[in-house]
Length: 77
Image (tube, rainbow, N blue to C red):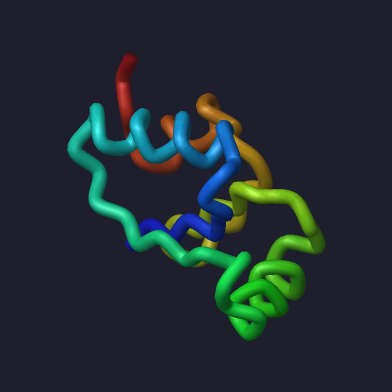
């Protein structure tokens, strides 16, 4: 399961979503600009205030780290 903690205006969040869509990876979007509880959860898990934060099967990745995301999801570019 892939979760993305994001905000609507974040360009890196948009790029991340397009990257995952391009590889047919399903994900759940969590808008931390509208959900204070989710924002606190994101900060607790990642230690980060910035978005995106990606959670893949319990592993946390701060930012759009294409290499690490591809490695975990076994995506070959």
